[in-house]
Figure 1 (spheres, rainbow, N blue to C red):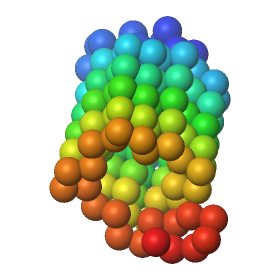
Figure 2 (cartoon, helix red, strand yellow):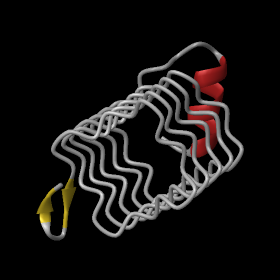
Figure 3 (tube, rainbow, N blue to C red):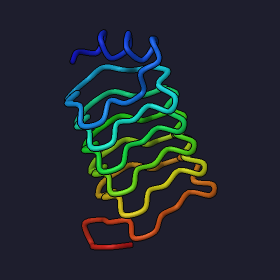
Figure 4 (cartoon, one colour):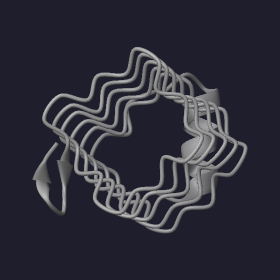
Length: 127
């Protein structure tokens, strides 16, 4: 599936894009509220400045994804791989990052109010 098809299906009401392969997808400024990317591979995708509130990223591969300045409130990243992800200035209020791998992820100026961070993994192990 390409980006245009994804956005078209989302506009038509589809929300389940689990296990989708969207490596290096360019989705800057996208409105994908409540999207299901459970188990998807979005390595090196650009999702900056996007509305991804309530999104399901459980067990997704999100290495080097650009989430900068995105709305990720209530998003679920349980078990996701976020190695090298850019989360600068992202709003992660009430997000779930439990058991996520945040090795080399940049969380500078990210809002982490009420964010679940249980058993978060880093290069040094579990935080």
